[in-house]
Image 1 (cartoon, helix red, strand yellow):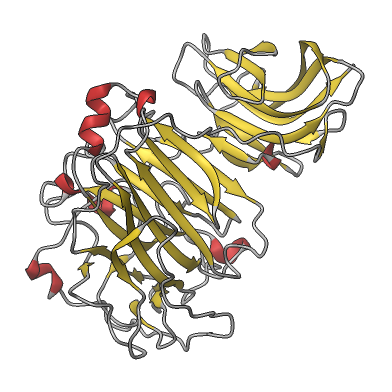
Image 2: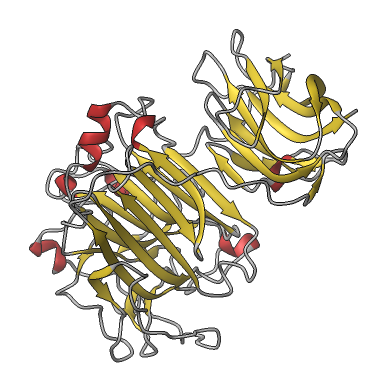
Length: 472
């Protein structure tokens, strides 16, 4: 008997949503939204840094000002309510907080930071804030590179207190403003997203059509990086996107603390999709959502009053008018033997991922889930030693519908390398009904970055993976 998976299906995007008319700026804020005293013990204020080498500053806000004052209205628009006028309800994501321009929800802290603070009132209603740049013209010059960067500490919550908390630093294509119905074709670049207090940053490009399409909507073309020390919630980290028109094909590159962890190249989609998503400027958005179809609803245990702290947001530009060159390599070299190929490699311990989620295993533990065609995970520096590995094995489960199946593939050092080993998997009797399935290898030695990739002729999720290992 096939069990029904009770989980919601694949992650939605931070679905774009809407800019605000002048009348909306005057909308009343929710009564009773009182800001608690801020805990600034962990705040490390810093002015916006000088541009990276070779870049010049296009625009910057380092949020200097007196405590309790609003961020500059010359720089920012305050989105009010539950949607843009005429836009999708609940900002298109299912989030529940009413966004305000109340200083309790959005204000400077007097120490060089912006605070965006989600608050719950005595009746259980949530308020928060969402601001977006007045400017909509951020794009690289022809033949040049644009860098959008921000330094921030995510809401300091974890565990049950973090349920439903969804901070984000992202952009939307300028044609969206005032239309609000042309997403995702106009492009959305998620520089930083985080949900439920995970020590993980997600970066994503949304484009094309939804659902499905060349950009795999509603999931988008994304990846993530985990395991930050100190955690994203306990300290400031720097998040950036570079949009590079100096290379051919063009690229978007994502960084956290200077570490490049994700790339989307122009040739991953058709020419019309890329042009619709990029042949215009963008505006920048900062917000903390509460609830929604990605993090799920908050609970009584969700902490109120824990702010997103933003030290600065800066836009930099470099070059222009040059002939595009070959892009830099986007797959980092093997990282040097950090994992034992012959021990159990827990699937959720990946270094990068595209398209999957970490979900619970009945009886304890975690696994990667919602895995479908085109998804992948990376395990850096897997040491196979000098005796050739001839087999890999994975513990998997599937509650896929009849006729839905796919391939689990091992690729070495590049997600586009030919598979070194493969096995097929279909329904196993449910998403918590596990099998250990083997696949052959040609004899692997040395240290490699191991990509686990997934291929299917159907768009539906077809497998969850608990762990994998290798054998001689």
